[in-house]
Image (cartoon, rainbow, N blue to C red):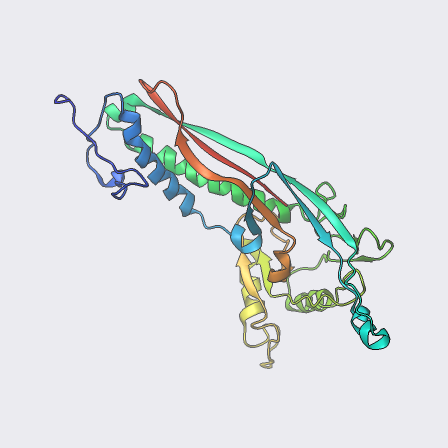
Amino acid sequence: MTQHSFLRAARRRGAEAAIDLSQKRSWHVIIEENWADALDPIIHHWFEQGFSRRPSLLDRLFNVQGSSNSDEQVSSVGAVGIDAWANYERSGTVSQADFDQGYKKTYTHREYPLELVIQRKMLEDNKYRQITDPAMRLGDSAKLKREVDAASVFNNAFSGSYLGADAVALCSDSHPLSPQKTGTTQDNNFTLALTKANVRTIREAMMAFTDDNGNKVAVTPNTLLVPPTLEDDAITIAQSMLDPDSASNAVNPQQGRFQVVTWHYLTDSNAWFMIDSSLMKLSLDWFDRVPLSINPKVEDKTLRATWIAYMRYSFG
């Protein structure tokens, strides 16, 4: 060991902080059998740096949950009719709450693994950027994969090839109320540009939505989800104190009603979404069957070492 210089790096869950190797002018390396083990905390550190670089909207838009099963089955129920509350005064009998069976959806978790291979000679030749950069890029790519998948729910919201449990697209002219009440539908698909007038029109339409018993759902839109190309327009509509379309200092009634959420991964520069954020999380699901991790692969580490980044999830 006297012929070799030495690198000491605490494990990610050890007693010391991980070493930021980009700040070092030279490497002190192990080139014995445990060289790959010594790199493990460094790989973890830079992988996590890459993963945390990209901001996420997943938790903000989806009901993110864990799972211990191969799949998850979600079943909705209809609303309770309000007339039943008056039965006791009329008849002296307490009525039982009656729910219609709603739609069912099965989420099947998919596996997403990728390998990161580091050659021993990179360590011997002090090629630290060729070790840390791939680890960071892999972490960044893992976050990107999750964001793109989550955004696909909205990017495919108008497509007849991506259907929800009610057999229509997320944004549809004809959402059925329930499997038991056929023939009546509701429309949540508006082909209107993002303007103050259209925001008012869609907001009023959403606030008139009803449940399967014909009662108003009390939808209260409070979020405008937009691509970067519409961010300035959305902020102008949602935050201007005065009417942006008026020269007479008229009040802007939309001010304060909406938070503007901009998502880089919305692919249609003209598509925008008005959302009730509390009701949204009752319908948008994300199940992390196995949270993202990166771990060494058991193999011969003489000339190269391999790490497996792995995550398993479902969404919709």
